Length: 87
Image (tube, rainbow, N blue to C red):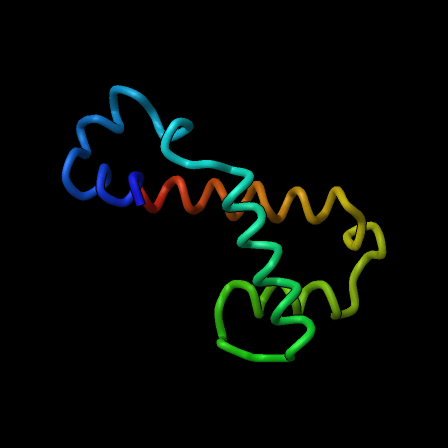
């Protein structure tokens, strides 16, 4: 919530302090993976980025992409996209 308020009402503050302080990566990571696991269990389709990632995960692909490293790379990509969107 603080990040959202800061982005809209004090954007110049972001330039001074950077986004690392505003974005708690462990919280974002938890929310992201909970959403992924929930969608995987329920089979709910929303036509968004998470659906695309699940299709990638369950489609024909190199088995190396199903490892922990793949999960971390996906998360880092999502987090960097999130940071770009709030700037």
